[in-house]
Amino acid sequence: MSDDTIRLSKRMTELGLCSRREADEFIEMGLVKVDGVVVNVLGSRVRPDQTIELTRQALAQQAERVTVLLNKPVGYVCGPAGPGERPAWQLIKPETRSRVDRSGYTFLKKHTHNLAPAGQLEVDSDGLLVLTQDGRIARKLIADVADYEQEWLVWVDGGLSEVVLAQLAAGVEINGVLAKPAKVSRQSDTQLRFTLRDNTPRLLRRLCDAAGLRVVQVKRIRIGRIALGNLDVGQWRYLEPHERF
Image 1 (cartoon, rainbow, N blue to C red):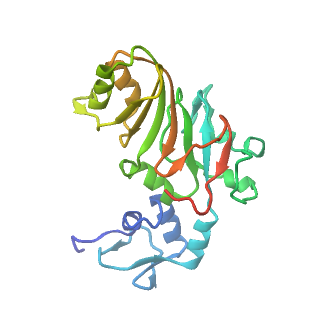
Image 2: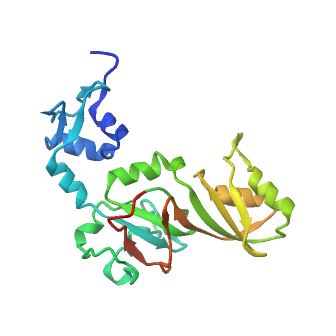
């Protein structure tokens, strides 16, 4: 076996064709071609110079998969819920669909199947959460999250002096590693706006704590080019066909 080969499913995710899970599904279903020949054996390996493509049936399946934008309330978890916890996906239902939705989609029960969070939003934070059936979007917002600027509003108790703002912009060490720089601006005596590409858990709270500020609320209002807009808390809408991450 040549040392320069790679698992077909991994190569498919590297090329952005789909997620690793979807790649395995498409391979098993015979919906993947390598240099024009169908490959349907899991674990198959390819060279980086080989041409990989999905069949029309696979592309049609991808086109049917939806992505939704939710204004997650505080108290809901993004991933699997433990005892007494409320999963965010349970909010995706007809009665919580926002009136601002202009996607043209008809809500179908299947749109809630395999709907997974593309990235995290802490249980005590609210704002924009992306839930998707599309492995390509999930991969972008999880594996390639540093490529996407995120914008946050943070409400605090404490004095917001220029010295404090400089501290916040300088970053903080987490486990011996300095967090990536953040852009920060003062919106009011109690509100800050952060723009950053670092998705370290609880980073904003740690930054504020290091600067002597007590965090009251954290809200994500934008990921890449997609903004929360006027979605009310607890409501959702479909990602429109022209919108892209």
